[in-house]
Image 1 (cartoon, rainbow, N blue to C red):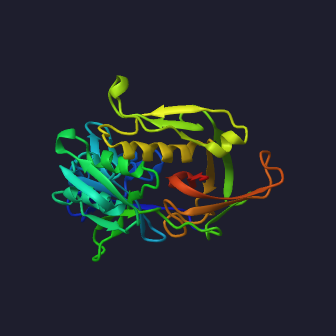
Image 2: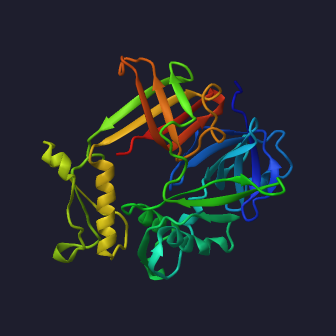
Image 3: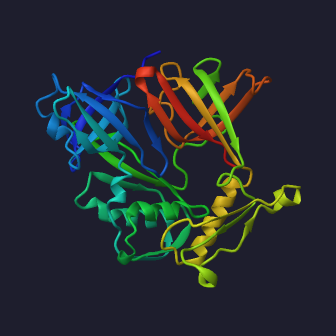
Length: 359
């Protein structure tokens, strides 16, 4: 069993090249990542003994902070440096956001895509950010599903908001931004993975978390609260009154026929939606996620005793939780679910995959 120790690097945001090692950089919270969404992290940097070029290595808007697992040499987290506060105190306070946040500061321009594979749509939306941005590399695999997608520069929708729209469609693709070493091993590049489904899904995944064992504790959260459960869903566009764009109602007909009550949910999936088919797709996907309510497994794992993040499992992968016995599951349980997010606290030797059971 090897404890998780991270090496921290301050890098140039445009090139990904390492500017300085940052051994005195300490996160003040847990590292985390989520599919198709940005996460943030706060740090303290001890200034006494800090490397000579620490200012360039952590410059807001110009630099990038990357964490590498020293045991596996695998980058596990990367974020653009955004705020920095330092003065008479012995430490500098820093903040960083994963590179999904960078896509929320770039715009796709006017694009008209008709009968185009979803992965190509996403790649085309991201392409403008390749000019003058971090070393992003588009890694897109065709999904086999063609859609129409139109965006106008006058809508002021960022690349991130457009990607969120496409991901929110029924059968929409998934995407994430990873970090890998460059070919010279002196910096990093950032593949933007676009797939029908991110990660590896298997009925018998190799990553097995045992309770008791490597899992210190776990929680199964089940909810039918508003926004988490519904058997009838309608997606609405912007506007008011009878001219407001509205999807047809999507209903969980089998559940309702089997005795479930009707729980209604109406939502506006994104700004500037003008395509009725897109709204219908949003409603269908939301119903698929909400019909039987949210079922989320939160695992509190001992990082040094559980399957290794980055080597044995990653974001989007199927993970198995094997429960011998607990108060919630006295007869035990064995569940396979997808990792939609994770948190890592190396100092506490804790890793927390967030597993979602999909219908």
